[in-house]
Image 1 (cartoon, one colour):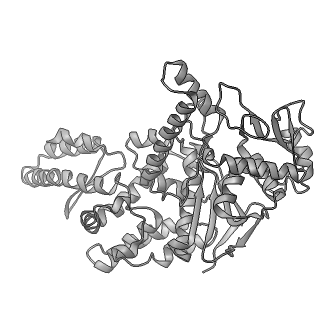
Image 2 (spheres, one colour; image 1 turned 90 degrees about the vertical axis):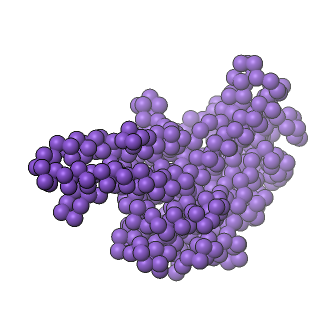
Image 3 (cartoon, helix red, strand yellow; image 1 turned 180 degrees about the vertical axis):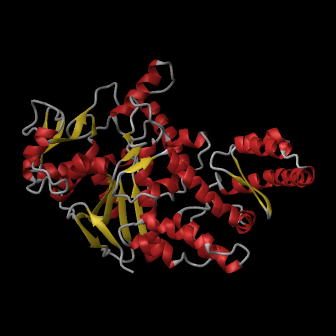
Length: 489
C-alpha cells in the first residue's frame, strides 16, 4: 500500500516516495539532556516510533535509517553542571557537563524503553559533531548567508527569500510575535546565532571566530547532513519546534546547498485534564513519575496513541483507567501464549520486534492499513482490540496473530505489564477459590456476610469481582496495586 503523510510545509497529505527505496531516511529532533523527560517529551517519541515501525514493515528493517539526536550543548546543562560544581562536585565543568548528559541520556533510554519505543539507528550527540558544524558555518559565510560579529556568527535571514515558508509567517509577523534578542551586532532582528563565544567558565571549542560553542539550530542541520546525506525523506518533531527551530534549519541547510527534508511532520502538544501542562498549575509530571506511581509503560503508550498525532493529546485519569482495562483484558485472555513467549526467549524484552524471528505471522492488515493513512493510530488500536476480542486464545494461529499485532504496535514487549498480569492472576487464583467456597457455604446457610466482606475487601484493593450463576471470576482492575494482595495471605 501507499503511505500518505501530512506535510506541514505544503499543508497537504502527500504520498511518501522514498528518495532511495533501499534506504528510507528519517530525522527527528530529540531532547536537550538536562533533566528527566516529561510526559510531553514522550509524544514525539511514540508518534515517530510508530512511523519507524511502519517503514520497517513496508521496506524491511535493513532499509530504514532513523536518526534522533541528543542536544548536549545547552545553557541549561551548563547551569546544572555549575550548580554541581559550586556544591563541591569534583571535576572540570566539561567533565560535569558530560556526567550530567550521560546520566540524563541513561534516564531517557530507560523511560522510553519502558514505553516500548525502539531505539533509532543513530542517536548522535551534538558534541560529537562540532567540526561538521564549524565547516557548515564557514560555508555559509563564504556564500554570503552568514557573518561574523563580536565573536558571534549569525545567519542573515534576508539572504534566504523563502524564510517563513514552513510556519507560514512573514518576517514582519515573526519580528512582531517573537522574543528577539536585541544585540548591536545583528544586522537584522531576525538573524539567529550559528556560533557564540564561551568564556573560560563555560564549555567551548576552538573555531575561526574564537573559543565558543554552536547555536542550537545548526546542530540538527549538521548532524542530519552527516548521517543522512544532502537530502532525506522525513523530518519530524513537536509542533513547538516548527518555529523557530525547524524554520531556521531549513534556511541554513538550503543556503548551504542541501536539499534537506522532503516531508515535514509535526505532532501537536499534550495537555493534562484539558489544561496545558505546567508546574504552576501543579499538573506537570515526568514519564518516570507515572512509572513509579505504578502506571505501566504500555498503558502510557496506549493512551498516547489513542489520539491522532496532529490533534492535541489530552492525558486524563479516565483515559489511563480505560487503557489499563483494555490492555489487561487482552493480556489476560492471551496469558498462556504470552507466558510461553517470555519463557522460551530470555532476550525477548531486549530484541527488536521482528515477529518472523518468533515464528509469528505478519501483523494483520486491519491493524496496519490505518497507519498508511497519515498514521491513524486510533483506528489501528481499535482494530487491534477488536481482532483480539474475536480471537481464541486456545487456537494457536489466532494467538500467534494477536501476538504479532501487538508486537507490531509496540505492546507485549515491556516488563511492566505482561509478566505482572501473569503474576497477579496467580495471586488471585486462591482468592477466587476462597470466594467460591464462601459463596457455596452461603448458598446453604443463606448468610452472605462473609462473601460480602471478602468481596468488599477485594474491591477496595482494586480487584474486579464478578459473581454470576456460572461462578466467581476475579480480574485485576485498573487501580490494582499487587502489593495490596499481600494482605490476603
